[in-house]
Length: 530
Length: 76
Image 1 (tube, helix red, strand yellow):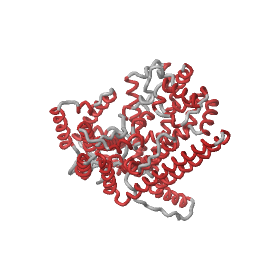
Image 2 (tube, one colour):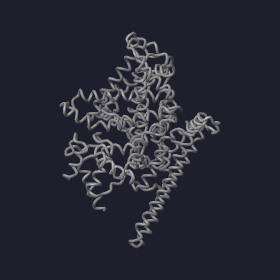
Image 3 (cartoon, one colour):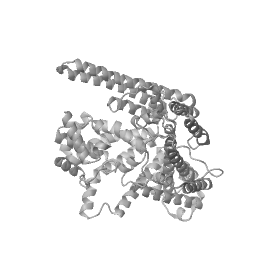
Image 4 (spheres, helix red, strand yellow):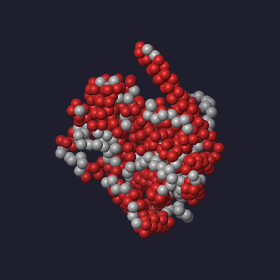
């Protein structure tokens, strides 16, 4: 079971779970979900399921420990004299911080060891060789359990939320196990918070026809995005990125655009399947995309792309760092020195840098991912710096910032910057990414595109027309969604002949225009690798 | 409330803080704006805004921000 698009998932695991869930009495439904989740994990990662079980047991125990510490502290406070209370409160906080530190060491430490030890130690050896010293560091290679980057963040967020008093510690080990291991979210997210899904999963609501239709529609839409567009572009992208020195800069630019489209179609398509699968059981997972290519700035792009990862970094890294006591003091001094606008920009850049280093590293243990993170840090930091200047200049020149032409220009600029970032993200190593970017600057000519040479590299004319038409359809869907139209609900509310006609047409479209069989190579689930 | 509106308008003069009810959900404010707002609020109203208070609901409108400030002042 390599992905959510595999026949084993779509034709076996998901229908079997739905069927069992539908015929099982209420109290046993949650057991069906948990068993299905562990069967899914086992089918993908085999015995590496021990890592998931360990994480589940660990957060259950640490959550209870946090709660016990708080309860003991409250009892002490109730008995204490008023002059002792400050010291007791500080003692409780110290103990709880110790538990959180232990949790971070265990969970992030495990992730670092399994995912990054190879990268750090092999770079350590390279540094030793550079210093003319023997490369003595042992470089281990671990098998990664599926979804470790996703469920680790869920585990850490649960514990921090318990520590902050946002949620109570969960005494029910099985509810926590289901929250952490629910199979639709396991492979590529979304990264859920405990209060968003845990209770709803545990309630295991009865199946209802409305949810079944909404979930089914969403799954079909996700499959179409992946199989019609992402898979169709794959051979062209593979050809250009693996052999970039054979291609003109303009072809590399087209490949970078195509990869950006492919990544969006693959990742958002997978998220559609994940959200649709969860909806079959009446569970609403958080949205992970909100029409990111409508963004006017890079900062806004990251509020619309991989939303659950962005909000995780914001809530657990950006705000805690930038709102810590030393940073607040620094911000206060910077505001006096550089003014109320530039002072916070300069100090929050420390937290922003932490976020983007983590974001880059989270995506993979390679230098091109770190570069990808720093690239976005630089863009957002520069955007913040020039924003007041842009406001002044546009006002002086009487430019209406809400005019459609100005907004389109901003959106186009954002899309171009995103595509450049994705070039480095996809490149086989940082060095190759830089060489590809350099080729785009030094060896640019429109001739290969105008002559139609593009069609010799793995994508032909009809393929291109189909991709463009689908993107136009996606644009129309996006505009309607931006205006608040809920297309899924609108379709479900139609009469059954209309619905059947639409489902039949969509299925035929997938069968006829899906890129599968001879001449196509389906793209591996990109985000599952992270 | 007037003092809060002055602070907000100084940070983002391009936004209508009186009418806008989706400052976060509508992607009008970014995280840097929030840091600036928190710093200004802490100075002006003598409160400490803990990280748990930085949630979309509290920052979606000037009214919600004002309610949060009053609550923090009451809690001391």
